Image (cartoon, rainbow over all chains, first blue to last red; front, side, top):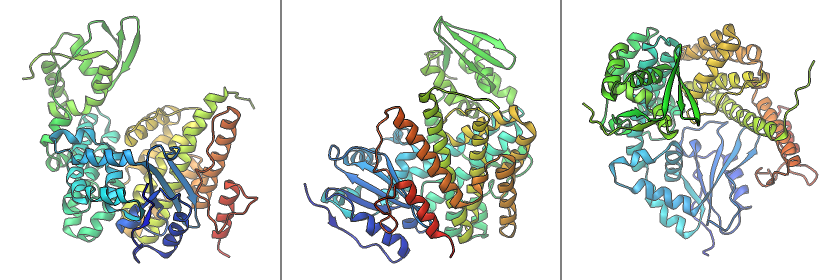
Length: 343
Length: 189
């Protein structure tokens, strides 16, 4: 095994207390471990209480896996994540995949790790780590994350629209505000601010556009200036958040039908799906409405069109809002995909 | 006064989940303090909102109500609010008001965050959220308790999960003692 080598010095932009902590810690690492310094401090948006983020990478089998380690310091804490070489290589492969549906396979943790490795400083690194690092690029992360964030924005918009239609005003407000934050995150990724976390959206917008500028305000519209009137808020969100191909792919209009052995029992607003003598699932809200239509014999397209009309939302919004629960019911054997054509 | 006894495994599971909430609160308090110091308006507002929602989960836990786990942070928060509405509608209304409050102009930020902290510490009875050091102590104590009880169950424990600070560590100090000593060191003299 190649011994780890000192690869880089930590730049002066990293505060002295952080540099000292990292250098002290690195001395305790085994020879075959690589250490990448990363996080908000390296990104340049950290503050005096930001945690010190390190990735410790080792060959699989050479260490007993542990997920994280923490250490309290005077004004910060150290946050270490341990990764095997296999995890790092798999991550590089996933992001290199040019397939159009690669977004479906990438979760929040993948984005977080990929970007953090891309911006990371390999303070101590084995040769193979140096070799693989060029495969992690900020541009690739930003390009994919911008699309993913817009899918998330649409999903929250759809849920907000349905919540509003069902009289859940406060829930709708929260969902629409979250939609605005995801949209801003997507816009920022396109503009070059790719740190993949919504909590930094305003800070990134202030850094990129300048706080209070017209571009800053436009980027964060719906979040900074969310209308207290939900109908207005919703209509503004619909104008800002497009139904992209990625959204269509994430929430495909594939028809569901009730499984043959499932009986539906109604209890006020909720429905109980009884699957043979095996299990019962309770559903409520918009999914209960869909189930009710399916149980009455309506095919998927008619069922969703009827409910969408009743709620004054689009079929796309309805499908996106209900998708997670419908998929869960599918996994549980209560629903299955029907072969019918979607109009 | 009554005694509520639970099977050890159930207790460890529940308290491990709570320990995660304590860790999250500690991380959020670091975010909040650092953001206020740096004038990072958006991060400060985000952190106080998440602290509020974490505190709802902790309040419910104290009442014996577990909020089902969800990968989606917002889903979990909305489930928590639904449970709080059932338990204490007046308190839920106050939380909704703070949650829905728009991000304030920078001059009002501290005052608005103080209002949320008042609700967290008094209304939702999460006093340790009031300072960064208190969140650290709460997290460390909760970790120590869970680890001690898990040990009783024979669950394997790793000792290298804590990143020791060589400027504080002493042979007779365990990790918990080291945390307390670090906090002591950080107090203004």
